[in-house]
Image (cartoon, rainbow, N blue to C red; front, side, top):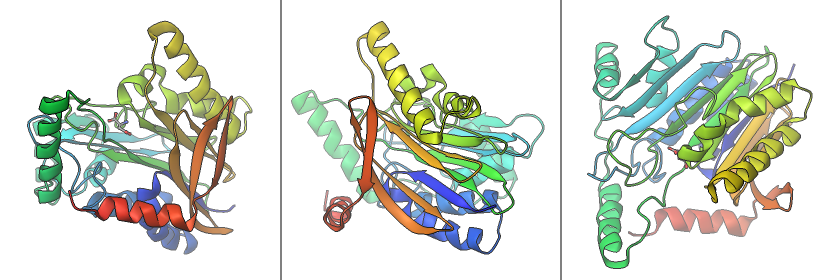
Length: 315
Ligand code: ASP
C-alpha cells in the first residue's frame, strides 16, 4: 500500500506539503486531509476559502465545508457558517454524529460554539476592499458579480488504504445570503469510498450539483474506468448535456484518486491542481481542456511566480 493525495488549485500546495509529513509517517488520511484544508482556510491571501474568503452581497463571509470518510462513508458538512476559524474541522466533527450531520447558518454556529470550536472574524480588510471595489464596478460597468470563487477540495489515501475527502469554500463572491453551492453536498462537491476511490469538484456549484459529479466520477471508477477516464468523461459528458439542455454551462473541474493511488483530472476550463505521493514531492500541475481530452503539464517557474504576484498585489 502507498499513500497519495490530490487537491484543487495551486492554493492547496502548502496544505498538501503539511499533509505529506503526516502521511509519510504512517498517519491517518482523515488527519492529513483536515490539516491540508485548514492550512488553506488559515491563509488570508487565498480569497475564496476560510479567513480572507470573499463575502456575500451584504459583505458577510459565509463559509461551506464538508468531510467524508471512505471507510465508513461517514459524512459531515456545514453551510453558510460565519465567524468560525476552521469550518472543515466542524464538518469532520459532524461526520462522527449519527443524526444532524449537515448543519447550516446559526444552527451550525450553535453546534460549533457548544463543541468548543474557535471563533474568529473571518472578514479581512483586504476582502472588504475587494468587495467595495466590486460594488463600484457592478454599478459602473454592469459586471457579473459572481466572478471570483474557487474551492479547496482534497482526496487522500494513507498507507493503510484509508481514504478521505474534504472541501472548504466561501462560495460565489457576492452570492445571495444563504446561498449554498455544491461543495458541502455529498456526491456533488465530494465523494469517497475506500474500496474504490474519491473525487472533489470546484467551479460553478449551481451546475456541478445538477450532475452529482463527484459521485459520478467514483461510480465510473467503480465500473472499471481509470481515474483519468472517469474524471474526463464525467466533466465532458455532463458539460455537453447542460449545453444541449440549457444552452450554457459554467466552469467545472474535478480531481480524483483511486485506492491504488492513481489520479485523474477533468476540466472544462484552465485549472491548476496539486499532487503528491510516496514517490513524488508535491507538484503543481496545469490542466487545459483540449478537444475531448484534458492535457496537463507541470506548472512552470514563471507561472508560479506570476501566481504569487497576483495574490499579493495591492487591491
Ligand atoms: N463550487 C463552489 C461553489 O459553487 C465554488 C468554486 O469551487 O469555485 O460554491
